[in-house]
Length: 496
Image (cartoon, rainbow, N blue to C red; front, side):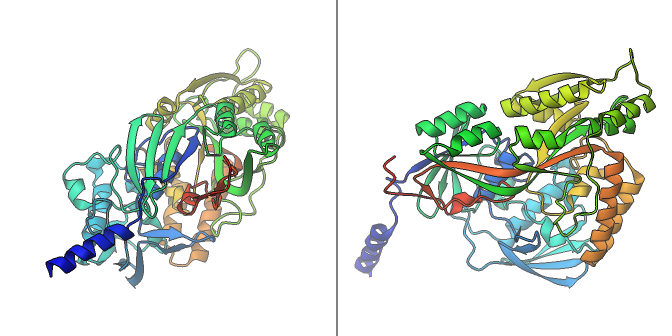
């Protein structure tokens, strides 16, 4: 028996994949991940990398409808959903089996107000979670919610490590197809693909021209997003790389502090909206790699509003609106405009600053490193800023960013938008069982928001990916995720 066991051991060792020669792919990013704890991740880089490290209960198909990921589900009644964990689910990266208790512990942590998770507001309809057995659990809601399964997209953490106080933000432990390796310095994060040992280094290179030059010289293998169009055009003419584009859903916008005496005035916000020449920016700065937006959701989303009017470029109307707000010669409004120090974002901000100056708004532009900038936005320390929402699939985004109960840390209503009519439309939509009825309320909400402009919609950005020619199989996703890394491969005949 002992001899047989020994032979089996050697057979398993011999057949196990060797990661000693696994390649390293260097993925250039404009900004670092802020946290590798999915309970707190809200920025694009963190969210995208966490999708690689953690498994989540539910995902979405191409039509933005929820689909099974780690679990399938049935509706016991409108306020009870039963989830069944997949029998072939992967264990956590430390070898521990992922169970229903881990799911409960993850969501219980988020729901505890003392933990200040920014995702709590989108999940507050959960009354309690009951574990039935190792593979099954029930979510009991305080009120019916037809969209509920689509809310369960937070990566699952191990209960034992949660209770031990593990610092997941820097020491992640999930069950995803990639595992954490190291984060030795702020600008370099390494993960490993579990199936074959492929290593991916996320390397922060803030300046897009430097990022592109490193790609061309072979110091990076791939880059995605945050590239000025002239650089994209130059890359498309290079033999060393291949450029891929996909229509995107990333929503760029201008945000305002609604408690501010200047931008809190709706006529000032409307003036800003009409002063910006979106079409010119899209054509000459973005190279046509975007489309104008009137709302967070794209018009082809099931809850989108294709009948929303476009925001016209009308400088004269903008000047009239400023006069209606009480401003004029010798009494120009002054606005501090914050953005990140990414060169492309600074360029866009400078163009917007110039366009606002032409209608009589004096804009002071302030740029910060990403961490400082994003910290100020989350803290409400701003008057006006530009940012983008990425990967929006669920209309629950409206509660998260617009409801009066979603002021941080309960959500991302960073501009302190407080409107009873908007709250009521959100709540009415959430109370409907029919998606058609929900869509009707969400469309009415989007029309209201377009009138009041707590944010000014700019455009939906396309996704641009560029890689060395030995990189194969990376599919660009509309939401800008890094899911293409699940299947990317390195050609053995690249010669690079």
